[in-house]
Image 1 (cartoon, rainbow, N blue to C red):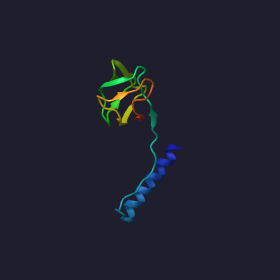
Image 2 (cartoon, rainbow, N blue to C red):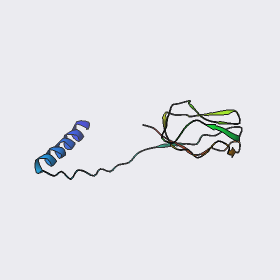
Image 3 (cartoon, one colour):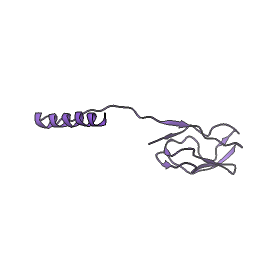
Image 4 (cartoon, rainbow, N blue to C red):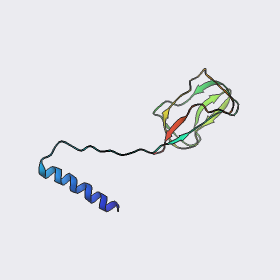
Length: 104
């Protein structure tokens, strides 16, 4: 199946080259993402946030600290959204954001 797809893509590029069409291609598709809701069991003051939007994270990496409780990532991925900042107060058992982590 992969060989068939590669053959079709190669044929399209050859056709473009021989016809002189240099306009390029427009491609579309989709990206799958897993959204994880990370939170603190204790709640309280968010003292540190260790990650930034666009940063790669690894499984079990500390991403934030809430009242001395360290919050860890549960997968490898890329942080797409950071919704909490140091100095904010979060309730016990609630999520700190949705931490959206894209799995490559």
